[in-house]
Length: 500
Ligand SMILES: Nc1ncnc2c1ncn2[C@@H]1O[C@H](COS(=O)(=O)NC(=O)[C@@H](N)CO)[C@@H](O)[C@H]1O
Ligand SMILES: [Zn+2]
Image 1: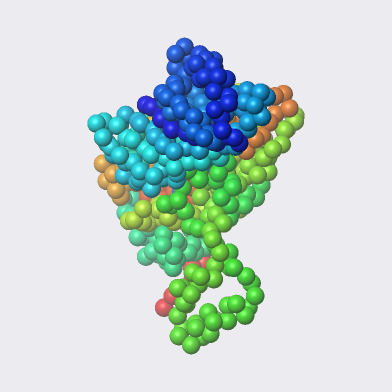
Image 2 (image 1 turned 30 degrees about the horizontal axis):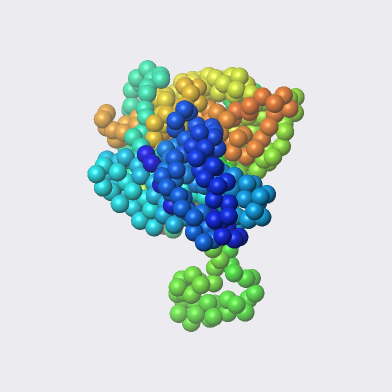
């Protein structure tokens, strides 16, 4: 991998008078300023240099240490000091005439439309990127981010094949499946729910709503109350800034529902739209496009990121750790891939999101306790056939990164269950997960601990549609066949609205 930069350091006067000083700096630079911070012999190299009538023109090459743009800044500083003192010549700025990054690659890039990249050529097993950057971009590490972007793409395969990591951790004993219908079809027949007008959206009648609340009650009784979680309300419209801190801004765009404000709330501004509708009974979507502002963010997607605004920039007292909170205040929205089927994979869903933060030990211990409580719930209360698997951490998957986390403690455990109607080879459904997210969020949101110890966090998403889909797929719709702990909480079947 090689960086190449042909730069022109603009001088305030003809630099010829300082030729001796410049020669001295150029002669020593590779051993001094251009070597600092690099392993032996891996600093930046001066390929050539000449003096213009108001510039010092230099060709630099480097590997990944003392990169050419950093080398140019170091030369600028050295010239400014030496020429400034002795000859009152200042360095006005650094201009890059040619800036290329050459990276070994086994294939060309699909997307060549990268900021500050003029061209991408794939030749003789290398990607050669020509950059168009100014001094500000060179100072602001833009070339470094471009290199990282390319290396990530080459490593991950250009998006597409996100090889999901999956390792079985535990599986419950088999149990008979007396019911093998598709519960969504039977629920539709029973009138328990109806499709909403939006893609992947359902309107839940009294029965499924009651079932959601029964599962929620079980989470309260078995986890939130005994383990001391406090309820909070996390925002449900998520601004770009939150997703920049959480990392979602790296890869969330294909799957969010965007939020745009009106450009103004002045009714006159909207009169033509209203008149258009009143006359045509059609909503003039084209007209709306010009009247709404840019997307300010999106609807709730991962549910926990906005909670970090509560802790951002704070130092948490030792006595408050571990913080154990949860949110169930609203919906999550995802523009899921096609083939939205049943209630198991929807665009609008309801989740209880548990978040815990503390020292690494506290987070690991809290996570362990959660796994024990879930084990009890799924074995003894919901009486499910289910399993747990160690998978690519959800926060990596949501940034388009495959593989597993750096250390073996950080990561996501998916809880999955078979849906009998899918058949014995049918794909199991992830109905919730538990994750240790390491330092990611406290770092991302700059949250410190009184003791100065690094804070860790974890989160667990309990999908109520998913619990319901798994539970009904395995137990059927007749409460008579449900486990007593669910029947007890469910009570009498709510009266159904009768349609004629
Ligand atoms: N499209 C969907 N439909 C229904 N439930 C979903 C959908 N997407 C996610 N969920 C539920 O939300 C849970 C967590 O989602 S996740 O993306 O895996 N993880 C996260 O977002 C973490 N922040 C924990 O919530 C899933 O296990 C599932 O129960
Ligand atoms: Zn989460």
